[in-house]
Length: 456
Image (cartoon, rainbow, N blue to C red; front, top):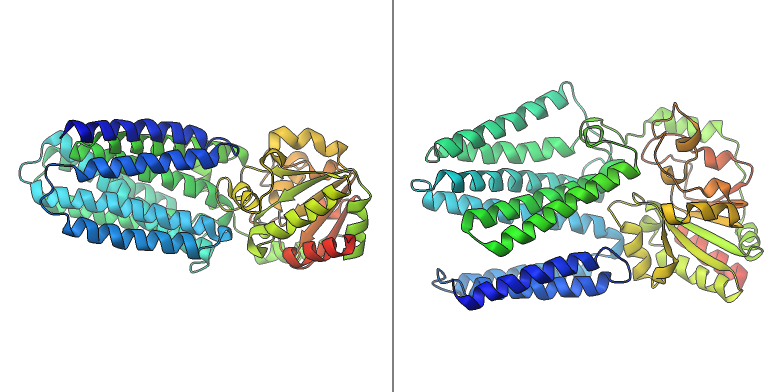
């Protein structure tokens, strides 16, 4: 490989590291993304200088098709559908890694070295698993597949057995690389396993699933780098894999859950009896638009708790418009962001940033939880389990021990809800029946707009 290509790969690797660091903060995220984009351009340029390229015809055609798909996805998919887009992107990444592995193996299976075969097998295993698993996550998020967990007898045992089987096939392939049956059987089982692993996982765990699949895609890409001797793929894949895994750990801790519980616990199923019980057992205090407007305007400090319902209603712009109106009256407004509010890590941050909410108003749960006791109003917009005080007070609750936002400690809590249906955990929210809580029913976007009009 030419010195120019190696320098471009080195530049790309450095830019990826700097860009990833920038993505760790809302204030520097845009800059980090731009730096990473420049790094990717450098990596592509270095690859185009590879001496094994005999024609650019199919490369240019593929680049054109891929660019068209990427531009269409960016232009047509709204920010509220970002989790679905991320899941779909992960599936493409996993498929790309798997196809590179299949191509390399089909060309060199008679002469491939044992160490290279190990990398190829690992790449195809995790690439295939990521491809179908991400498609399943996309289907659940989009509603093509039921978002609840789908279970059947001996599900966990069969999944573990299948994964052990693919690992065994990988070992056998490393010993006898020329046995093509082992290779293609492993690829097929890995893709089936991707489907079966995600089916039993409910919507409550989608943030962890998405970040974990991101880690798998990174591992597959890194293995691709080892298989084809590409340093920038090794580095970029390792960064992606490590950051995805760390983020998965953070998400699990935010829900007080373990990986084992997420992958095998079949959590996140809201059953009909729980919905009926919730609708009939709680004594709630319903408020009007005028009541909510009066409560908001009479306070000095408002903390907003956004959730997935805000994304569904596409209410982030209406929320920011209301916040600006409150600030014009001298009322302080902050946003409390729970790590697992929404359908992917950072979902609420992305939506609110798109609505031009100032970065300094976005506060992580640990940073702002102590301020709720000083707040006049906690405004809950489409959030449920992440504000449920049962996590702090009820040892029998399935979410007990999960860190939640202290919305119940505010002087008044206004909850915007479409219906009395429970959150993903399928349990009653004790916050709704507390004496300092009022509920305003309706579409969140429409409700926020009407509250703004009432304040005019």
